[in-house]
Amino acid sequence: MSELDNLYREVILDHYKNPRGHGVIEGADVEAEGMNPLCGDEVSIFVSFDGDKIEDVKFRGRGCAISQAATSMLMEMVKGRTAQEVAALDREELLEEVGIPLTPIRLKCALLGLGVLKLALHKGKGTPLPNEWAGLAEDLELR
Ligand code: FES
Image (cartoon, rainbow, N blue to C red):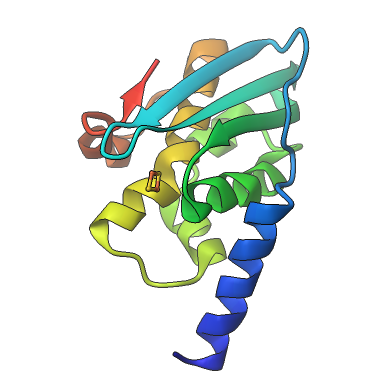
């Protein structure tokens, strides 16, 4: 394993152990949840808006280190951005943050939070669920 991979792994573990934006927003404007049916892991995301801007965003969930760490990273990436910008966020942007190569199963873990967030934005602001998500949405149970 390269030194860089090790570094990414440490960052992932740090996010897993000390998740950023972890918790619930009481009176959130919108909330969405999703589950990875392969393993039963779940993520719920709460968003409050200031106009179209994501004023605050939090999550709670249970699952593997990758799913929870990637969602934690996502919270930091999207706060203060507009719903439209985040709805159009390329999943590669998040995967670059995660940094390590992922198997297809792990990819679903890493993208669980992003799918749930985009679903919340869709519910709250009517933003589209992007095409790139279409194939995965069947595998991830979003509600
Ligand atoms: Fe369940 Fe990763 S093993 S989301």
